[in-house]
Length: 322
Ligand code: F6P
Image (cartoon, rainbow, N blue to C red; front, side):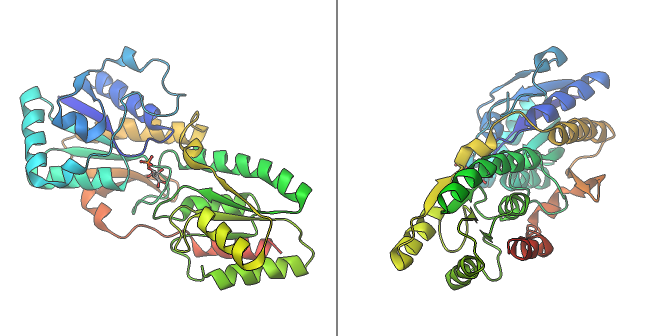
């Protein structure tokens, strides 16, 4: 079987581990792996080439994706997906390993349902916002990157007795924000799914901390929080209370860097398992981790609502920041 491997959407540390595992497992089972560059855009443009095991040397520990990636809005059109299926058939590519997040899995789900292309999904996004899996590649690494950065900010915040608003990624998910906030002892966290994410609640919290004697605070703000960006919240606090605060946007620093051991290990497991299941004649699924064990979900599961950050974790941020 000729198996195409692609990475799509925002890159995430651990994607290279999954590429390497898929390619080498394919080789071990007597299949031929082809690398497709720039995700689904590469399928439309036939930007692909055979990818032998040796092409994966020395990539396990590297961030980003050696196959490059793209967001491909054209793939929202059924006609373009039909073209993609024709391209794949003509090139003899009989199955796809799709490494990406929500948008990539939705594209794979449609390609599988409409065109019968066997697709195997591997969760790759620093957002950790996919239904049916407790983990996605890149989340653990990005979390550690954010925590390390905020530990540094903490030093200067406490030295100056200042309030810092630190923005982390997550356009529609607070997973990274809540986990980061708990891991670095933030005084508050703002995130899109928050039940009490009001401006008044934030002000009351900062005020209570001030009365308890805290002179510096760190508020972690998810990029997609309902109150607006960290810059917008900071401007409002300055305007209303004249605070000498600082805003830091961590941005794409969170997406880069060498993957953590956990992201490498899951990249290896999922990459290999995706190919083993394709080899067994399965298609139309994605992999995950549920309660520590490797899980297999039907691709249609991606249409379920995304998971919200565990409420007990965001509650703990509040309790422990006294
Ligand atoms: O989906 C991953 C992610 O990093 C989000 O957290 C973020 O909102 C988005 O990608 C940024 O995308 P881009 O790199 O295209 O600006």
